[in-house]
Image 1 (tube, rainbow, N blue to C red):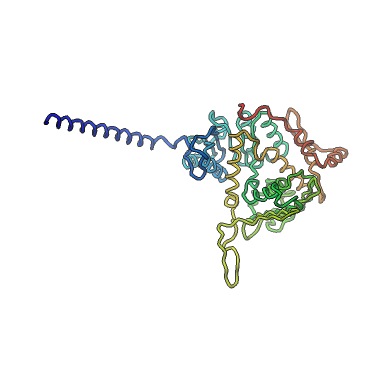
Image 2: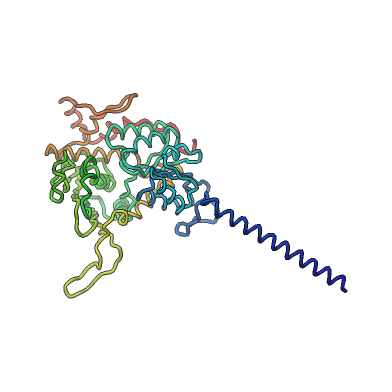
Amino acid sequence: TRDRAAACIGQEIKTQTRAMSKLCVALCLASAAAFTGPSAKLPAQPTRAAATTAAPEMVVKVGVIGAGRIGIVHLEALSQTQDAECVIISNPTVSKAEAAAKQYFVPEWSADSDDVINHPDVQAVWICSPSSFHAEQIMKCAAAGKDVFCEKPIATDLPETIEAIRVCEKAGIKLMTALQRRFDPNFARVKRAIVSGEVGEPITIKLCSRDPSPPPFEYVKGGGGIFKDMAVHDLDMTRYLMGSEPIEILASGSCHIDKKIQTLDGAEAYDTANVIVRYADGKEAIIDVCRQAPYGYDQRAEVLGTKAMIQTDNMYPNTARLFAADFTGNADLPYDFFMSRYKEAYKQETLAFVDALVNDKPSPCSGEDGLVALIMSIAAGKSAAENRWVKFSEVAASVQCDENGCMIVDLDADEAAAAAEVGAGWISKNVKSLLPQKKTNWLSR
C-alpha cells in the first residue's frame, strides 16, 4: 500500500511539473510576441463578417500611399473586410506611417512610396497622396503590374490624365478613380430610384453643393478653380444619375465670399458658380456651388421624373429635433466637415474596389469616368470665361496623343467647327479612341 501511495504521489509531482513547464513556455512566447511588433494579419472585424465561416477564396494584398486623413479612412475600411489585407503603408513623415501601421496592424511602413509600389507582396495600391504625385505614382504602379485605387484627380492636367490611363490600359491593370459621391448612401438611393423606374424617366436633375467655409488662399491658388476642385463631383454626379452622354455646358462664376481670390486667374477667382449641363436626349441638369454655407455642408440632390420626384436632405450628426416657442427643426446643424459627411462613402468605394479585384469585375468608377469628369470641368471654365455654351467635344478634340505621349493642340477654325459638330458620340470619338484596350485581365496575371 505504501508503495502504491508513493507511486501516486510521484506521478502527481510529474504531472504538476509538466503543467508548470507548459505555463512557462506559454508565458515566454507571449512575452516575446510583445516585442516583435504588430501582427502581419488584420484582425477579424465583426462589423463586416464573412457570409460563412470559411476563409475567403482570395485575399488581396494592399499597399497604401499616404497616411493623411484620406489614407487613414481607406486604411480603416480595408481593416473591415476579410477580402483584403494591408501589408505596408508609406508617408513622407514616416512617424505618421508608423502610427497608422501600429493602429491598424500593418506589418511594414516606410517614408518612400516606391517601397509600397515595389513591395513583392503588394497586388494593389491605394494612392492617397497629394494630387501632384498621382500621375507619376499611377505610372509606376502600372510598370510594376499593380492595380490602382487613386483619389481624384488622376492628374492635374488633361494630357497627363490621358497618359496615366493609357499606361494602365496597356499594362492590363485596373484603375479606379475615387469619385466618392457615387458611393454615398443618399446619392446611391437616388440612382436606384432611377434605375428601378420608381421615378420614371428623369426630366430634370438639380444638385446643390456648398461648403461650410472657403478654403485658404493657398489651396485655391493653383488648384484649377471652382469647377475642377469642387464642382467636378457634381458634374460627375449629373452624368451618373442621368445615365446618358453629356453634350454641352453653360457656366458662370462670380466672387462674393473671399475677395482676395479675385486676383487669381480664370475660375480660381470664383467662389460661387452656376452650371447647366445639356445631355444627348435634350434633358438638362442644373448645379449651383458656393464655397460658403454658414449652416454646414449643403449637399443635396433632386431628380424630377415622369412618375415621381426624389430628393436627398443634408446629413446631420443626429436625428434630434427641437420644438420651442421660437424654433422648430433639427437640434444641431448639418455636418461641417467633409470627412464626417462622406465617411461612409469613402468606406464603400474602397470595399467596392476590393470586390472588383477579388471577383475580377470592372472598376466601379473607372479612369475614363475620371477623365470625362475632368473634361466637363474644363469645359465649364471655358464657358464661364467665354460666356457661351461649350461642347465637350471641343475640349476633348484638343488633345492629341502618339507613342511619345499626349499634348494640347490649338485647333484651327475648321477643326474647331468640326469638333463642335460632333455632339453625341464625342466620348467614343475623342476619348475612347485615345485609350488602348487592356492586354490581360486581373486574374490572369
